[in-house]
Amino acid sequence: MSKIKVMNEDLANKIAAGEVVERVMNVVKELVENSIDAKASVIKVELIESGVKEIKVTDDGIGMDKEDSVMAFSRHATSKLKTLDDLFNINSLGFRGEALPSIASVSNVLLKTSDGKTGTMVTLEGGIVKDVKSCDLKKGTSITVSNLFYNTPVRLKYLKSLYTELANVSDYLDKMALSYPNIKFILTNDSKELLNTSGNGDLLKTIHNIYGVVVASKMMKVEGENDDYKISGYISYPELTKSNRSGITLLVNNRYVKSNEIVRCILDSYHTYVFKDRCPYVILNIEVDPFLVDVNVHPTKMEVKFSKMDSLLSLIHEVISERLSHKILIPKANPLNVEDNYYQDKYEEIYEVNDKVLDKPEKSKVEEIRFDFDTLNTKKNEENQEEIEEFKEDERIKNMYPIGIVHGTYIICENENGMFIIDQHAAAERINYEKYYHALSTHSKNTTSVLIPYKIELPNNEYLILEKHFDILKNLGFEFEEFGDNTIIIRSHPTWLPKYAPLESIKKIIEVIVTQEDFDEDKFNEKVSITLACKMSIKAGDVITMPDITYLIEQLRKTKNPFTCPHGRPTIIAYTKYDLEKLFKRAM
Ligand code: ZN
Ligand code: ZN
Image 1 (cartoon, helix red, strand yellow):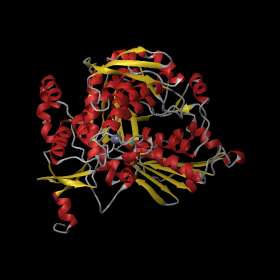
Image 2 (cartoon, rainbow, N blue to C red):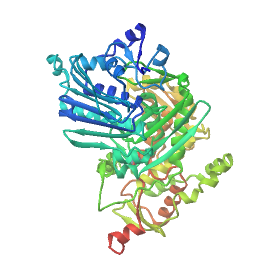
Image 3 (cartoon, rainbow, N blue to C red):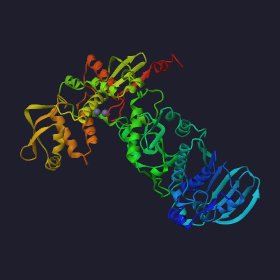
Image 4 (cartoon, rainbow, N blue to C red):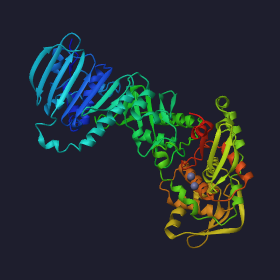
């Protein structure tokens, strides 16, 4: 029986809009998806001159009989879709059934295929069948598309540079390999191998094949489900990031899709774990009833929408933050092999040392990190008994004993596991950040009146914005009144404000109010906490005593995320005992 069905006119017309073959990647995509539909377990893509000269895709799938192999190139024929309903069903890969004839019409095509019984060879030029003959072939299909656009020379110009074409194909095949870890994908360009996955079904192995061993060794498995969705995959340790989002792969029912909303949710979940503007590696498969998915059918966009988006976003957020908060994330120092972006990044904060050094004794900055984290943690543990089983607060970072300080900034500590270096500013900043954030998000209403009221004058434009947001100040617990031109008088402020620099802190809060775009309570709390923590914490170079250091470490260990400052810089770097032994060649 013929596996190719003639599709109805309506569907053909729906598709026609997006059928234009304009990129090498689109051709590769069509051919590879045909191979997947043919149940291939090995798919080999061979390009010559980035595919502009020749694209050859070979698979070991079910192949076609003679009738199908000729039909495949006639218009309105597709094996993939029968009705318009299928178009919206994300379980079926293709909706570009017309692409094969389109591809054939602008190139030379050689099709060799065998269903295991008969082998067929079809030769086409510019969409016209020149030759059909039977021959002996192994089961599977190979399609060679050469001289793409040979009969439309003008369009060749529009193909972007060879490099871009190749990069797009390579990126696409990476995503396909991640979508189908049980299929072996091979990509070569001018005989040079660019990708070769194992196809053994192990996603982590595929990650290794694509991103290399360093990335694969820093991925954590995640999974979770709620009533509507089930998600699973791998996420990277926060220390492993990229400057763009290309490390994030989203799959819906194993099909590669794009969704800005989900990417934003993932980045939010990593917030304060990674340095600003850095993106983690995440491969996430979302299993869902296809009826909850609304695919934007434009063939090149792959954008999806879900009818219960909130439910999905909260599941993703929950699973990722859970995973990050249950993992020991101290990056290991690797001085012999300083790899990738992580250490090479210019941390803007390094330069903040001389930035507005506050004219106050350091002692009060040490005082600032006082906060009873224990009350917080006890409460949390009562809420969730199971959590205690899984991870005891103290085990996240074992106790460390300070030895001394280097460059007035880096605290050296040790314990039975090795040597640790703590950045005193980053550590204090993390503690204060969590403290302020807690106060803000629990709407702590304790206020302190000031003996001599603070007078704050603002530039006209800023005052106009502030005026509109007086309610924010009120909700925070400030008592104040307008006092003439562009001036307010503060009579009392929330108790949690940094003790030694309340006025400066109030000014910072006002600055956040007048510079934000749309008020979002969460983002506002976040911004205020980060700003205050950065400005009010012990700085690099501040002199602190040994007991202060001990206290700082103790407090850091109690925070929810002791591993990074709220900007995503590391607070602790570890040299394990073994690292030290290796460095001194005591161990191999
Ligand atoms: Zn800072
Ligand atoms: Zn920071």
